[in-house]
Length: 543
Image (cartoon, rainbow, N blue to C red; front, top):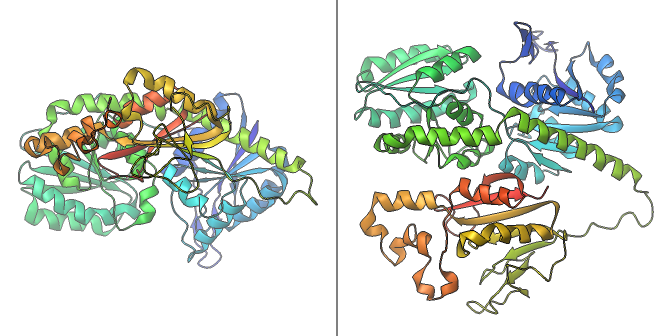
């Protein structure tokens, strides 16, 4: 395939006449960018696709280069656009030309979609009109689906930087912590520092704040140190890519807070936690949906301070947790693996546009598409509208399923006839030795590209809850809902079918789904029962 990626070239603002540099620059003979979104979602996939034998070019678009870029659009099979900023009008104009002449994909890695801003309106338009939107997280994909996206693929961010040896060697008199990120995230620092002050009374902390130049930060750090240096000393360091790798190598722990009251940030990419763990460092993070797959490996908590306390209480396990994270990252976030996903997403978008172009217009072509066929397997008494509710029991709590069927053999359903399978608190009721074959049978009825959604208790969260208070956690009543019910099921049912026969962590369930042949397996926020942290949702697709 011949593919182009589009980025903003050097531009002169029409109002203030300031010159803005290109997002992509050359350094030591290679292309790079100060923006993680450009390095991870433009330069990395471009390099990966070149390595796979495709012809890939970069188009830098501004007012002076627009005509040349527009003139060469038809020489490409597909053109990939990124989100626009306030200076992105040339990109939007080129996008309009591309949609009319070639396959146009729109890659989105955050919610820069505020309709009150020009860039937000432009990005929403591109979401609606692109042949395919590529989202960095499942949560972001759901958000853009509601905005009218025609077709969506989910491709996460690759790791970058050196793989570090997992280590945990804090000095008794000072725990070294690192916060790094975009200057737009510095509003998370005040609450973070309040939490670290509490932990610092137990173990003094040296916090390095690494971000782009901000005139107030060095001064604020100096003023803060005058009062709190003995429990939380802070220092500012200007961000560069090399400084990030050096900072990660020198720290003991990385802290990654988020703002609960900022919904747009809940869909963000996992790159900061990926980079921290890939560098071999312990990570403490608030529970963004993109971070949940690392629940077994990092310390994910609503409170950064509490997450750090958990790390300090479990220091003997930190190195192995980080090793586990690196194995997962190598499998899921390897640039080569993601290049394969980009290749597939682009090829599918090309095929889909050709198919749409071959469908005749006119009478008979306006019939509404058939609604998706979705199965709710093991529905019990939870009868969901819009689903075919399936169970082996004729009635539970007075509710009857639509289809009575043994879930080991979905005989009422033919191969590749179902768009989605949902199973809420079902897989834990089967023996471990039968689960892989069970999921293969469920996958049999899925269409290609169809989605399997499994929700069940999170064994890791239950174990941690039990160890925090074994006396309360061992109860058979509601006090055991977070613990013993997860291990064995709710005894109030008095029903052998309701016994739990195996437990799963997010990663172990993902491995079983992959054994059953599913791809793009990822954790998403749970939507039923108690949700996180007790429960989890893992999603995969049929290739």
